[in-house]
Structures are given as structure tokens and as C-alpha cells.
Image (cartoon, helix red, strand yellow):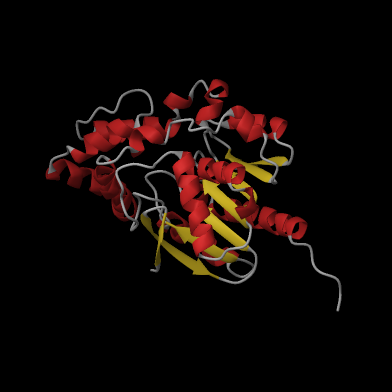
Length: 287
């Protein structure tokens, strides 16, 4: 897997296909393997040049102590975009990856042709999501950790999750790995490494991506939110306040649509990317 040094950090990336540039941006605590596992890069590579990468502190990329706000991650993307010689790209961002994608659209509009969000929560819109701290995915996580005697608290707290996982004795970690299985094991093992960074606190910081900045994004935005998402109010807000935003619900999913409903998610992403490509890169005149 190739690597590139950007913003003082070594990032690992993969590319496939040819055509307009599409960049897939994973969530916090995830990595680019989630896209590979879903098959989305292969599905898109017939029409696009697809780039996936591990964000700082995740997967195979370097793990600096700081720089984990959406603003810092957006600068990582901007420099990655330049280093790889990409054209204005369509970004597909899951959860926090969508926050990074929208921040990049605001801070580096020359790099971003459009954004597809997958179930993203924005700290700058927390006033429209009063139940964020009790989202169902956190409830499920808390219940699983309780089975090995670890209390994570009632509200989302990544820093606590990282600290508690880092403090687990080997036998408790083994119990969790058995519960989560082969795919979840990789996710679980990177949590203690993030405890050594500011990631847990910084990913929930507004970091300049206020409601006004979000509303100022001029590029086309597609808000793909899951049927059982805790963030449907955010989807409605984006559709109402952004100049070029359309929303679509992915059925039978509650936060990980690419895994919960792979076929439905892949279809939606492919349809919208092709529509945006025709708008952003219209065919030239006949020879």
C-alpha cells in the first residue's frame, strides 16, 4: 500500500480505476478497510478514479499526538489532494469523515467538487441534535463493554472509550475480540493507540465548522442518512440551509449503511456520483 507525507504526517492510501476523482473518507476509529469490506471502491472503479486513505492515527497511517479536529483533518486532505495530483474531487464521507469532507469543501473549495455525506453528526449543529449523546450505536457499544465489566457512561465520549480500552487486561481484550469477530477485531485493536493522542476530545470540537460556515458551502451536497439514524434532524437542516443539497434515506440501516445495507448504499452513492459528474464534468462538444 503506497504512502505519502502530508502535513507532517505519513498517510497510507490506495487508488483504483480511471475517470473523475472520488475520495472515500472513513469515520473516526475506522479505516479504509471499511470501504474495501463493503466493495464500494470496486463498484465505483469502473467509472471513477477512487482514492481511499487512512486518516491520521488510523489504520496504517502515522499516529501523531495532535491534529485530530475536522479542520486539521481537512488540511491533511488538502495536502493529500495536492500530493496525488487529483482534480477537484467528489468526497464520500462516513460519519466524522463527512465532517472532514464538509470542512474541506469550506476551507479548500478548489479541491472539492461535491460531497456525499453518510450519517454525519456536526458539532456545529449540536443544537438540532439534542439526543446525540445517547445515539443507538453508543448504546450498543456500551452494552457490549459492560459484558466485560467496563462502564463507558451514558453519553458519547471517545476519549473515555480509548482510555478504558487501553486499560483492559489481555483476557478482557480477548473477550471483546471474540464478541466482535474477525472484522471488528481490527477496529478494537486501534482504540488503545488512539488513547495516546488528543483524538478523543478533538473530533467532537466545532473547530470553526459553525452552522454559518456549513450553510455557506456552495458545492453540491448529498445527505445520505440511515433510516434509523439519530441524526435525521441534521439531514433536514442541511437540506433546508444549503444551496445545493438533496437528501435521501438509506433503508434498513442505523449508522453503518455501507455494511447494514450494502446494496442500497452502493446504489445511492453510484447514482448520485454519476449525476454530480454529469453536472460538474459535462461532456465536451463532439469532435
